[in-house]
Amino acid sequence: MRMILVGPPGAGKGTQASRLVDSYGIPHISSGDMLRSAVKEGTELGTRADGFMKRGELVPDELVIAMVIERIGKPDCGKGFMLDGFPRTRPQAEALDQAMATAGVDLDAVVLIEVPDELIVKRITGRRSDPETGTIYHLEFAPPPAEVADRLVQRKDDTEEACTARLSKYHGETAPIVPFYDGRGVLVRVDGVGAPDQVTARIKTALSGKA
Ligand code: AP5
Image (cartoon, rainbow, N blue to C red; front, side, top):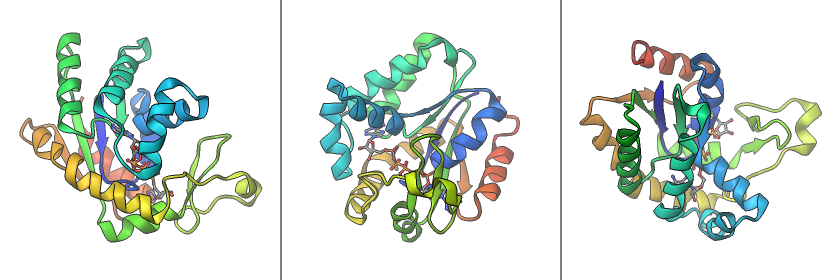
C-alpha cells in the first residue's frame, strides 16, 4: 500500500498513522517528524528549516522534496509507505509523481482527514507528546497517564499564533492539491471529527479494497 494522509494541522494525521501502519505493514513517514529530528540534531537541513517551522510557515520545497524522496527510496519502503504531511504543495505532489513513475510504482490512496477550523486550535494548543515513546496525547481529548505527565513536551509551533499561520498555509497551498488527486480517482474523504477509534474505523473502511 502506497498512501498519503492529508489534512489541516491537528486533523489527526499522526494519531491515525500510528494506529494504521501496523495493519498495513508499512513505515509511517512524517515530513514534520523528519524535520523536527533534523532541527534537534542541528544538521544543515535542520538549521535552515527551524525558523520556517517556528513561524508556522512551510519549509522551502527543494529542501523537503529531497529529504522525502530519498527516504521513500530506502529498502523498508519496498512494499509501500504511509506519507504524513507530504506532499503539501503542487510542486511537491509533482515531484512525488515523478519519483514514483521512475520507480514504476503507483499511488493507491490519498486520505483527506476533514476537520473544521474551529476545532483545530483547540486540538493543537492541547497537544502534548512523550519524547521517550513518541506517543501523542491531548490534555482534554486523549489525557496522558499520570506516570508520564511530567515528561511531556509541547511543540514550539503549537501556539495559537503559529497555528493560525499553519491553517492559512494549509488553505492557501496544501488544499489545492486535493483536486489534483481527486481527478486521478485516488482521493478518499474521511470525517475527522469524533473519537480517534471512530476515525480509524472510517479510514479502514474507506481503504478496503484499495491495495
Ligand atoms: P507537521 O508535523 O506535518 O504538522 P501539521 O501538518 O501541522 O500536523 P500536525 O502534526 O500538527 O497535526 P496532525 O494532523 O498530525 O494531528 P495529531 O495527530 O498530532 O508539520 C510541522 C511543520 O513542519 C509545518 O508547519 C512546516 O513548517 C514543516 N513541514 C512539514 N512537512 C512539510 C512539507 N511537506 N513542506 C513544507 N514544510 C513542511 O493530533 C493533534 C491533536 O489532536 C493531538 O493532541 C491529538 O491527541 C488530538 N486528536 C487527534 N485526533 C483526535 C480526535 N479524533 N479527537 C480528538 N482529539 C484528537
